[in-house]
View 1 (cartoon, chains in turn brown, red):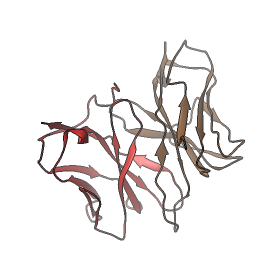
View 2: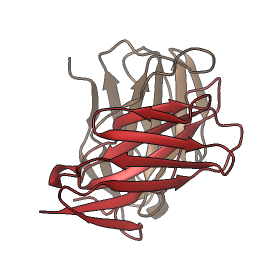
View 3: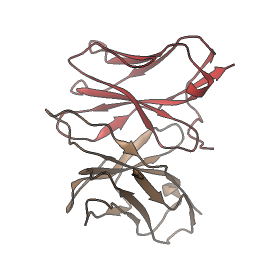
View 4: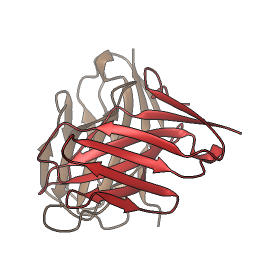
Length: 117
Length: 112
């Protein structure tokens, strides 16, 4: 059981380039999300998905696209990278949407450090 | 290592001391709270959680206290160890969705 995996671990892009950050989980979790982490800012939610075929925007979605064609994978796409997107990106998954059900902890991947020049 | 520690409040303690990390949350509708630990170069790791219908919850060496009146959350770590050195985040959730809002974090430094 690998948990949540992310690739690549490090990436340097030039302004305007595009790339996809990969995220996969092998725990059959319904819920997956992407966060970015900047110094002194905590983690901010970019996009999330409550199941295959369903995605929604979080707090800071601009400049990012996501899709969820399978339960296991939740890639994050940067269509035209900007220096403001320099950050550490974390993918997370959990089994529940919360609410009246018991909330289940989110499991985080190891992160991708992205630098945009 | 990560630069997440820049500009963060820092708590420095001696090994064996008890540590208290505080968090003020903003949304009075939040009904679920989590504490995460993040070591340098790693993703956040779940420590303990608490629902809004509780005031206190204990785990192994950790206790979370919730004061809904003043929207305040605290994490108490007993007999702090050097391995506890990390950045600690509180996160809040509003019922119905698994979207978390994170605080900015506190760095805990434990000296031997």
